[in-house]
Amino acid sequence: MGEVRVQYNAELVDVLDVAEFIPTSTIYFLHNKKLWCGNAEMALTLMKANGFLGGMFLDDNLNGCGDL
Image 1 (cartoon, helix red, strand yellow):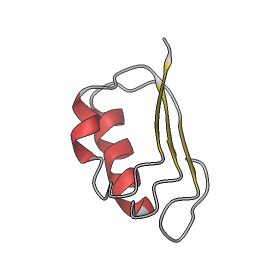
Image 2: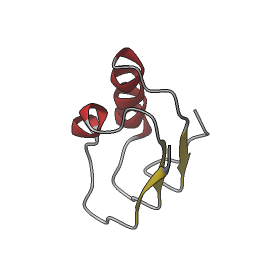
Image 3: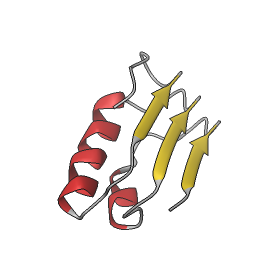
Image 4: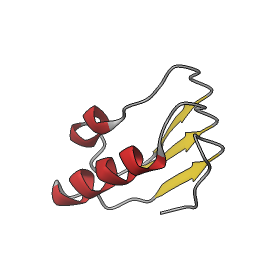
């Protein structure tokens, strides 16, 4: 188990493809100014359906949002 950090990507708007590649890590989406938190929440739902056991942390993305 480890962690993945996706941060400071000025043009990142979609993270749904991440759902197939992160089965057990903690993932952070930080300081991605165009990433809508709803998109990250959909990715988390898909990840959990695929056996994701970690957590997701969101901070300072488009419109802000809390940790999931």
